[in-house]
Image (tube, rainbow, N blue to C red; front, side, top):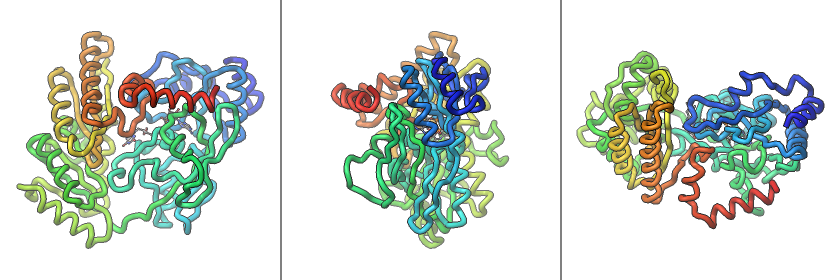
Length: 450
Ligand SMILES: Cc1cc2nc3c(=O)[nH]c(=O)nc-3n(C[C@H](O)[C@H](O)[C@H](O)COP(=O)(O)OP(=O)(O)OC[C@H]3O[C@@H](n4cnc5c(N)ncnc54)[C@H](O)[C@@H]3O)c2cc1C
């Protein structure tokens, strides 16, 4: 591996390769990740172009050195862990917008472009790319995890926004998956092959993404409920009635108290009860109609239980409470504890049941745990704080999480709605997909990376 590092230093220049301990640690461990490996990369390299990525990859392959592509490092399942050490390829230096095709409503960017920066730059054209994972995430990492976020209810997931990809394969060959039309049925859908491949099949260096029109108006509603079951039942009712919501998010009473302890997002004091966050977008008329339908559909909905944001700053502060949930959790975490956070998704009709059961089970652990999620598409997250050095506690949490994932599978759901598999969920993936499907995935992997 060190021979490979020296060759890369020679090819790219010494300043593009770091062997600093702090760098290695920040690229090999994440405090918000459920799984971390003990292995660390030997070096971090920072390419600036597809050609440089190809040169690095060729050297790594020649020296049988594992390579780990790294975006912003915001993934939460040990996705960028380096259990076999190797060289971490940090794409942050590839942060250029290459072409903005305003009329075609698409944009071509390098993999290290941060989605929030990109959306800021194109907003004057009234366009945006709707996926919203961590505000720090890069386009390459977002595609590699097939991420989504709160907007998925209206706009789908990352796979729906990829027009084409430039990918460096493990032997250094550079391929492009498609050209630039909004749709194409020419050949295998290689966009889908690389979207969600978590860096295992190649390194995405460039991507063309579809863009959506920024909505005219946005309003945020927040509604509190006496129980989790009431909240999830209301969510199902709204979805089934076809109320055109842009997002429908849930946080339980514990998560609401965490938000309060952490400053309340804009200083607001929240009611510590199971809460739904609703996002309405569209024209003023269509939005008002959706709000009216919502008020009608949820029985007992009164103005003190349902608040709507009227100004832009109020809207931002209401939504920030939802988006900052994970960081808020980390901020209140007692010393010596870690967060075990899982993400599962089930068919919509089973959501209320699985949230209720999972919450009861984690409550029985006697540990601090919260439930939150993108309930608009049957996806929710549970986070439990535990002491990793207490073997009994660790085993109890592991068993509880394991039952939650099996329950999701029994309900024809998935062990990961949006965070991917990483190193933490590999065994469950076998259960979800079965041997034959895993064999096909192995065959695909070997065909590009013998
Ligand atoms: C506060 C917070 C909120 C979040 N909210 C959401 C959410 O709502 N929805 C959601 O889906 N996720 C969410 N996430 C998780 C995370 O933001 C997403 O998984 C995101 O897509 C990861 O992007 P990244 O650039 O940080 O990738 P990284 O974490 O750097 O990498 C993720 C994976 O992709 C691979 N990879 C990275 N770049 C490339 C590349 N160029 N080519 C090939 N493989 C690559 C890595 O090897 C790794 O396997 C959240 C995380 C945080 C911390």
